[in-house]
Amino acid sequence: MLLSNLRHFCWTLVLFTYRDHKTIVFPVVSAFSIHSKFYLMSLQTVFACAAAPVESPTRLLYGIFWTWLHLLQACVSNQYQNIAEDTINRPWRPLPSGRISQKSAAVMRWLLVPICAAASVAFGQGALIPSLSLTALLIAHNEFGFASHWLTKNILNSLGYLCFEFGATTIMNSGSQLDVIALQSLLCSCLVILTTIHAQDFSDIDGDIALGRVTLPIYAPSTSRVFTFIALVVWSDILGLLWSVGPRSHLALCGLGGVVGWRFFQFRTRKDDANTYLAYNVWLLATHLLPVQARWNVLRF
Image 1 (cartoon, rainbow, N blue to C red):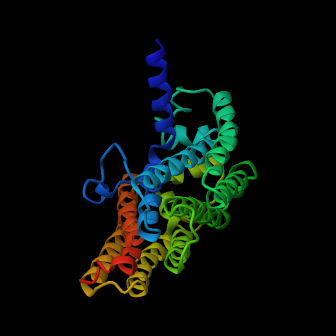
Image 2 (image 1 turned 60 degrees about the horizontal axis):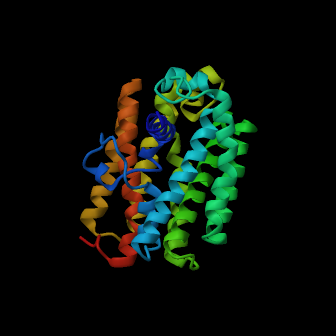
């Protein structure tokens, strides 16, 4: 009985974070096997490895754990008040499927705040400040309702990603001060997320309408798709030039961005948008790997 309850609890935690593994906890192998069920490496971990780089395997594991723990806080915070949306868009999640009650999820949501802060203290201010900042952003996003408008939602999402990436990068760098490459990487990532993260909203339109949210795809249905296409191509070109990757690498990145952007523009069913969002995460992963060129000159071809 105890083992069964423990298994149920652990799988509930996994289901809270399952969909967001594609963006926050996303495996390197997903570039080759996008439908893999078990995600082993976080996008922020990949970013931190490229931007920091990693001091040791132990630091890598610390960074993965810190990222997942804070992802859990974000997911529980996002989901415990929005059962109606998940009932429409993701009925398999713990709350709409009945695996956990709303009251229990609310308790978990606020317990995770001190748990995440305590887990960050050991790594110094470089992890504690992003942890506390993420908590503040989540309160603004959910409890204060800033997620109801596309502009404030995108701003909060981009700052949230910055918290994840700054914390993971600092942990993997043994708490040392980040150099110019790492800081430049963080800035680029924040701007890319700010201008493209609405890609996750195309497949969630029905649920967002039910909650009264005004995401960019709802506010500007056609224009948002054109903008996404342009943004992915332009960012691919800018980042390729900024990180001085080789001509073939640059062309491949621009081609990937163009294909993903074209899919958002051309294929508009909910299923199509969900599949294109998976492809968007492959592109996002590629952009987060570009700092390795500045570290090791491995993308010169």
